[in-house]
Image 1 (tube, rainbow, N blue to C red):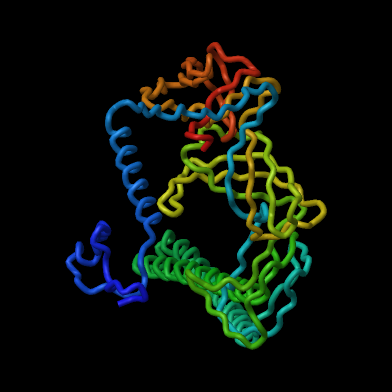
Image 2 (cartoon, rainbow, N blue to C red):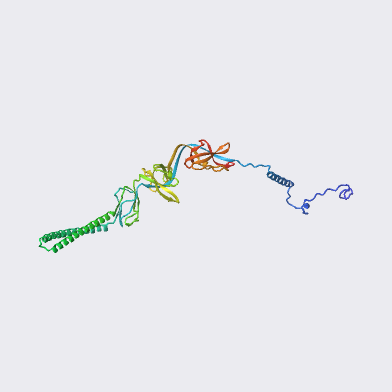
Length: 417
């Protein structure tokens, strides 16, 4: 009891308080959990977001929203007017106009080398000498044989004269019936034999003369001389080396002619050879002198084809002035051959010739006819033109309704891409 004498507890006239349901009981857990509890505000926020997402999904899929495709962005380039040069590119090497490979026509041992790399030589200058002891001995032997042959000829002449005199005397006696007929026939036979001996001796003399000349010629070939005026490019022989004469004799020297006049030999692709003609101007560069170009002129285009890396090419020879002797044999060169030149032409970018708007059929490309596209009120419009020469970046317009200053479409993208 309390101080008033009343029992503790609820008043009889007091209403009972409503019982708050336990969330744990609702969830089936009769024991309250300790730890983290999600605030009611967070729960409400999650519910609102979920409802908003669902509503957005229904709106997007209801057909009320129309998605508009992005309009193409066209890239244009202006048609220009000006000069254009058309060139054909080709690569090759610098070579002397005259080049002589020198080998030995005689087998032997090298006695002396009289020329070296880069030496200037004149026609007839000695380049190399072989040992000549055996050759000189051959000459002495040939001279001895010649002398013997000459003696044989002299003896044969004497015998012939004697036989002739005997025959004449016997004929006179036979005509007087002093000598028998048989004796005359014997004298005639002896004369014929003496004549044959003389002819044989003279033939042996000719052989002896030829052998002497051959021995002297062989001796002269023991000294190898330059056949032209020029410069020694290669020397592939040393003193004491044995050289052999054969059909595939090794090259001992390479002599180049006048190095102030060189030539550039380039390989022209079969697709371009129809544009290349003798007399056309060209320029070329070599790695030894970066940034510098050298002038040249087409001298000839060979008819014989060559196969380079499975590509058919034709050799073009260009004349090169090398007065300053900067260019050397074997230098690799890249040439641009001027095949066409237009001082004033309407030039359309080649990219425009390749462009076709999305959804459009490719334009005409028969012969020189082409289709390009220009913008009219933001939309592409086809323009038919004919084109001529091209330098790889631009083509010359030879016909059609396209003028300098027109902007042709070269590419397309979306959203500025």
